[in-house]
Length: 146
Image (cartoon, rainbow, N blue to C red):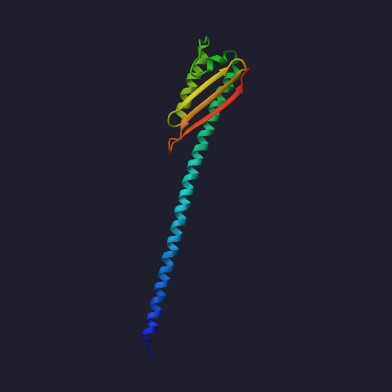
């Protein structure tokens, strides 16, 4: 027995519906994959930013520890240099430290170090710009160096 025209039409419509279902599934999968790739990009950006903050903290800690060991010359470790300093080694260490900070962080890097002689508190601020969008970042560390 031969299939009738209406049976053929319903089978071809069923095939068309299956094709539409497949296209919808592919579209949904595509949007999901796009979302996942955007999320992964943001995670990489956040990870890079965290790594740069860790580097800045380590560099600030290094200078503060140097000043604590050589606290008699604490005023010589300020950036920009304020006043006269008799300890040329301290000035050299500070300059070397500033150069390493500039090399370790991206963009425009601005390390500043200030000392409040009355309280003995030293403040180290390191500013830089983010790699992706030039957003300013600032790390500020304060400790007593007496």
